[in-house]
Length: 393
Image (cartoon, rainbow, N blue to C red; front, side):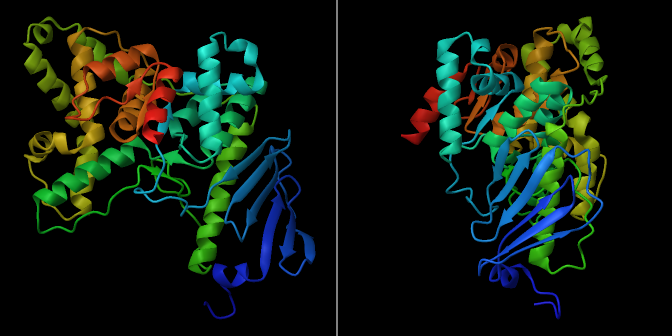
């Protein structure tokens, strides 16, 4: 205990619930003896679309309610370990839209099998039988929408994900490279395993959040960070104002390579090698950072060393093999392919089931090299339900 500043375990013995209205800044504390104290922090945010953010000290569940009445819960961080975690189903944005329409506008789901499958996945998720995580790709694509359509989709994603997130693919592949390098250089410290699907605050962010709670005891500081992180992203996504998405120029390089006569004259085997090499070239700066953080000497062989170990890096391997396949078939690269390659590739490497749109499903399946493991990517929700049903027994 910090002298004069009790930590979370001690506060939990006295408090039952704490809640704040972000719009007004009003706070309500419910004590375990039944007393309720209300106060005001002052300086609320009139532009917030959240009516209440609360924390239950017994269940450790965070609850949020929007001004329009949407209600969400964030599962406590210790809900499941990797060994006890239910199957993870990662949905491409188009399939999240189907789930959203099944809740808010059923007439838009014209295929009865899709409607039934969407309802089944929602039922599984709300019962805790599957995890359907949100990622920063979903946040980016949702933010590009506006008005009721934006809020309906955001409400569905936030309600069904229950706080579960897929780590940023950049963070995942950097960790993969660090792990591969640490094993190769036995003098360096081994990295702890990364939970790719997590309930941690800010897990889906590429960069670690900067927090200002260092003066608080550890448990209370962690809770404050969780409340702030989840309230922030829920408030942003439920806001009906459109946020323009940046247009990446990343894809143009691949279009040039794809149409290059010299490249197309190469053998299929060499094109596959080139795809992996281009993947390593894409991320070499992150590899340098990973090596530097581990105290591993950096020399001209780093790229070669990473290439030689790419089979031990699941998401980077899928990324490289998908690049090689798409270049070999002269696929046309579009700006949003960057999101598909990064996020669907990362999900394919670690999730139990991935539901993508048809084109991405095709190239991920064709480029899949997962050893004895079957490719987890399917293009239709009913197929996903069939896979999940098998996993659940």
